[in-house]
Image (tube, rainbow, N blue to C red; front, side, top):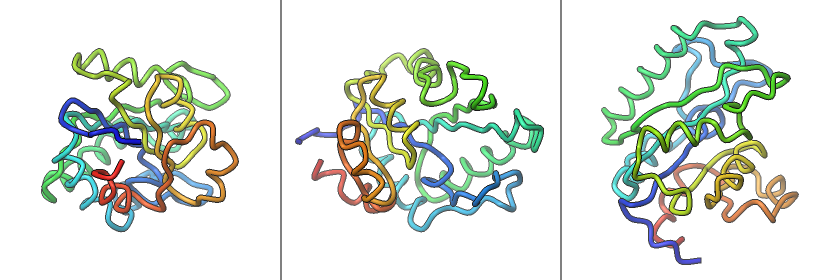
Length: 183
């Protein structure tokens, strides 16, 4: 598959497990708990040279469960964006869904609401020229429902369970970034 990624393309990134380390059976509730995955800052810098728009789409039901406030989440995201910027990268915007999985809210992945919000905010977004990179079935399904190419970040064994939904598999974000010209 030869995608010819250029500035007309958009990259959608999941947060937990992709940009930062996922906490086992917990949520990142403070900046002190936020740890970038190995190579993710370098990866975002590389992506920033190739993609015209980069957005994060993240389910954050810890808010819905009362484990943190939206204000604290904004602080976490502001710190994340500052660290990305200091590393030479750029994330244009972060979208999040604070709703519980049981609520089936349209903004919660795999619902497409966050993708539609991004297209409203960035009129040049074409989902046919977009990639969704995530580490869960809901991330990949979100991308497919919008007509994006999908990149599974993580264990290839898990990815083989749904090869019909996944275009590419990489063990981590930096490996994906270093392979971008080969897609």
